Length: 335
Image (tube, rainbow, N blue to C red):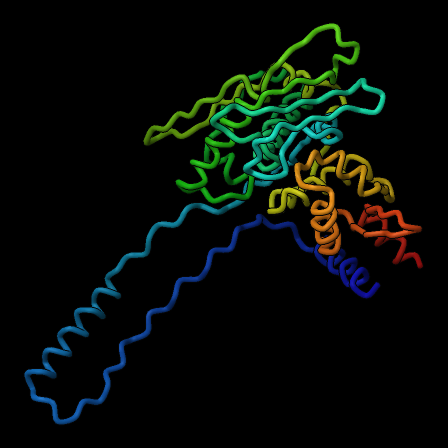
């Protein structure tokens, strides 16, 4: 209880802070201290001169060494958008190295999902999906402006993508970005969603294509969504706004828990799922026993944005309760 109260008031204090651009904090450079010369006794002048010259040279080298240019870390603030359809069913791997296909079928047999990979790539993961949250946000801006129908192809500066997703603008991040785009393109999707009657069979990816322009004066990414994903994004009421803090979650399981809470709790008070249902919704390839262990650890950490997590055991049944932080805080203040 004390932990929950501390979290509530910590969250309240944070919500009253003046909104400032966020930055990824870089480690401070180590200060250079002057070399302290040891006291030398009874040493011939030649040797002293040799030692001083060597130390002096080393000191000059340290002073003259120029710091390496570090990648930009300024974060671009925007309103990320996620697709409710894909928050409900397991379309994404929770790990970055999954090879085994994801298969899901609803109890009534109407909803079917099968996600498979290209032989040279892993399945598209919940981490790769961050890119789609940015693309969806840009398309939502166009829809809200009522100026035009969003195009299926968007061109976005590489620097903007990385900074929007709370990443460094460096070489490694550029490589990771290309690999994420490749997985989103090459991961195969077969589903009855928006085709519940099964009138046709079709296979597609999340992206139809992507390209990278790399010139001295221009570095940008061209992203073309698949028709199925594009139609889902443009569908009225299909998108949900998510927290920017979502991008700071490093656990695939915690990302899944946040998306589940956002989809089902939203702005309401709370929602509850059995751990068996969460296992089914996650599409996890881990054994249930191991998934349960990981889930309990994530719930105990209780550190996803906007929602509290609570592990509940009652009569041999185990469930996870998701509670809206803002609603919980309001109740406590009223009491």
